[in-house]
Length: 230
Image (tube, one colour):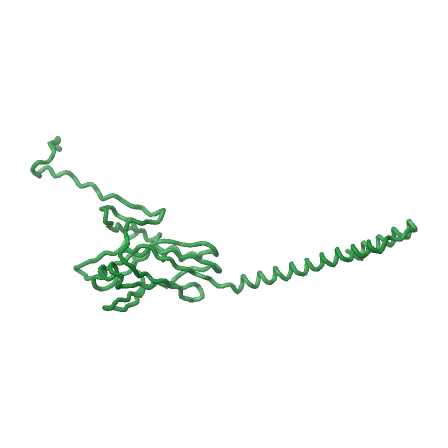
């Protein structure tokens, strides 16, 4: 391009029998030199960014919220329902291999997550309502789809531990390490350890149901006088 412009100036000088000032040549050389440097830098930058993306790794960060507990005395099992937010600050990746390690003075055990027995399950809350847990909305199901950089996934996850662990968690004696793996098999984990937390904190899209209304018992003394069904 510069050569074409210089050729044009030479022809113009020959036709007009006039010489172009030397400063004009200097300015043109400076402009095209700067432009050439920018083009070369831009190409190298694009190449570097492309290589950086190819070699970038997932960068997960776990945040744990309130923990719900339920104890089954017949089976002597404590079911723990954890609320989880998983942020990805690196390359897109799924999260798999979810597991929890429970530590207390009595036990130290690592297990995989518990799958709901049905597509939906009503978890009883302290106020008499029910938190609706759905298989497709649990964190282990949501993270089967890759989490893009700068995005997060959230949901619940359940574990079953032998024995009554409610007092240990309520007193801060028991602690839970929750972990998962990205596509490079690198483990990310976070610890839950603290005193009992309220069970009335929910994600924005979680469903809470009222308990079903029981039918009136007409045989109970003092029941309201209503028309009896025919």
